[in-house]
Length: 490
Image (cartoon, rainbow, N blue to C red; front, side, top):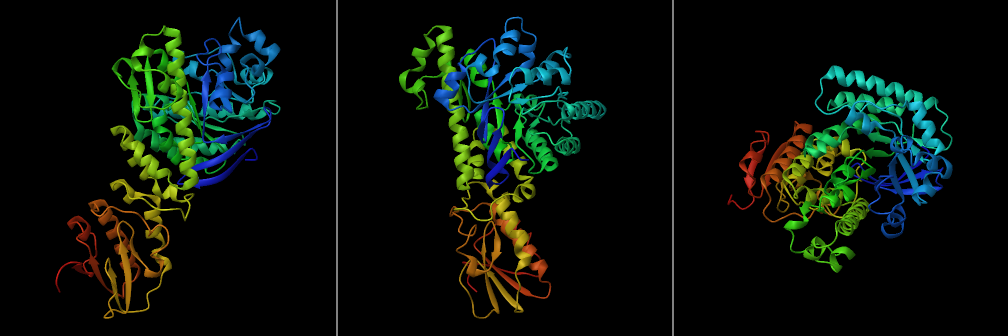
């Protein structure tokens, strides 16, 4: 992928740069693409650029194609002049309208040519957005149609315009993975994950995590991944940790029209608010009562601006978390905002082995912030790499306390990681910050590490000295390991 370069990883999250040659700009990722309705602009694109730092936006070429008022101006002047925006512009193809109304009157070849003619920088073919939970026969049939259209897009003359390869497959992980591999094989430029909006609308974040993970298995690290319709800031961190780079959002405007106020924990209705928990200019200059008393159009624009401040603020927070190696701590924090987000985080950790492949080996400090921390990629990596260490003696002490000369070797033990050579105790992730009152999950993860280590050395005799581990953790330890509590008298 010559147009996309990754600068840093954390889990599967990436700090990247997407070069958009037709626009002559390089877009920093992860980022948000505000959706701009060419007919109704709640916040002007020029304001998106000047006030919020928008480097890229998305609009709908199918709406322009069918508009008596805007089609000719778009062709004559080009999108950048029409929208008054100098950054990169991506265009959708009409697939959303296809999913909503069942049919559209344009082919992939026609809409790609129109997107090129109006000056789009990133164009999209007409894929088939297969909704969640359809029967497998429908998912496979529509996936075949989408793949055929991607191959037609490859043959289209698109000039310098980048072209997307949408990934479909409904909620079948194997179909999503296969579709992603097929999309990757086209050599196209950006990979949107389609038909996921129903999952987000229904708060099915665990299913969303499984869908994204399956797509990423097929795509690998081949190019930027766009999570279509992912506009709520509370899920950016989770999606980024799974490997998504681009999000698009009409939520900032749609929510504002319904008097809804975005936060990273969810959405509030203006009528239910007495105080604004935000320091953006909208919230510091107005009270909820003042905003509620304004004319509908003014109120809508101000709420949309607040929603954008929160949205771009969360994008910056996610970027900094990737840079500092604290993305999963951020996901953990955001997961506490809604029970279904916690479901999503737990589903994300079901794919820890996949995330570990790109996760940085060394970071600042591992913070154990919840039982979910025991399932993070760093813990998995530590367990897997225990086979790199040799034992020379016959009697080995594994302990949370000090060494003992009665044993041939003494190894440290630390929940949630398990055994480690004591000389590595000052290295990442064993320098983890953990609570004094460790939970059962941490003890169980440490016990799994002990089990792995003991099984690697069947001829060695082990004694484990633990600091009041949960019974469920001690039950995981092989019977041949002698157990002692750190604070028990011998």
